[in-house]
Length: 436
Image (cartoon, rainbow, N blue to C red; front, side, top):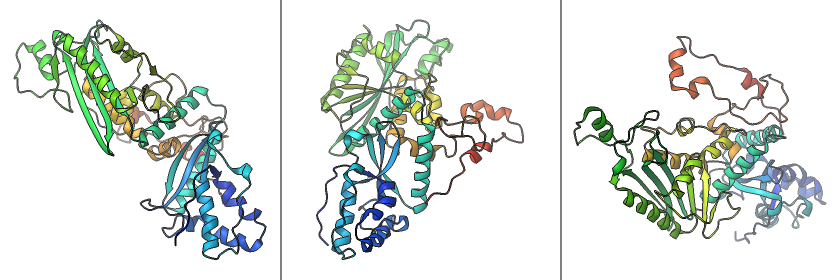
């Protein structure tokens, strides 16, 4: 059946469409067909008229209002299509009227909107309950957390558009004098005609090859460390850079190569520079040993994809948003990768750190909206601050509570034969309530 495809002009709250729309219809005979097509069992069925080719289950939208509350949404195009479909198959005598215009949410009402998919009625119902709980938890939370959550959703939106160049960078310096750079690593992602192109690299400053750290792991490469200790090494030993071959260059070439990398990345549209805790690395980029010109660098991500420009992302901020941290507690790259289940080796090698930073970014940016992603990764881990089963949710926050053995690799040695104690109160605190 050929029908006109409506254009999205806005969004309607799921609850308004599901609970209220049929009640507002002037013709009582139209109410039952509308209720039937919106029934959750029918909505997730592959034969539903709103089913989208290539999507398993039903598609809705998750939007963030200007006050940072989340809402599950229908698009205006979906609502229009329902009206036309019911009339076309003669389930309604006339086109049913649209919901009141006051119910329509436009772009000015929303910070972000992302498509979400539901394979089952239970998944849809669970998400509705979780959205309600999260909105209560986030009332009155630290504004820093709201700002981080806003950035997280902007990154997700920009990443899905597959435009520009995304470049994770990392520098290593001698730990006795942080002005002496010893390594640089990078990992880039860009797209060409829809194909994803990835590149990684690692540079070692030749003149500082034998500057050995005292307080930080010496993972620049195997050869340099063993030569320092034993004064002899088998030249066939494997390097510590896990994603390619390290290159040894002099200081002048080191500077020139980094400058050329940034200039090349800028040719493909907007450049997103990715760091893990960017304060020091930005200083290194601007230092005399590198001297990259960044006159137009922006630390605030745009709402829409720009044609050019340089924008800074920080995976420590993104992970803080995901775990619900609104304070100054920033996770190390090793800890972030552990919680995201990204295997690591030879951290503090600049090439490895850059690529693990990119993997962390991709893991979060390609996932679901922030609250759905958090629940998938760590279900039932955002218990109330008091831990009491019936404690109020208002203002409780959405901070994930990690167990000690998740935070520390060595904790398993201290558990004893009985294993770790488990606080079951956090599961009781989030017991589901009955919803329609």
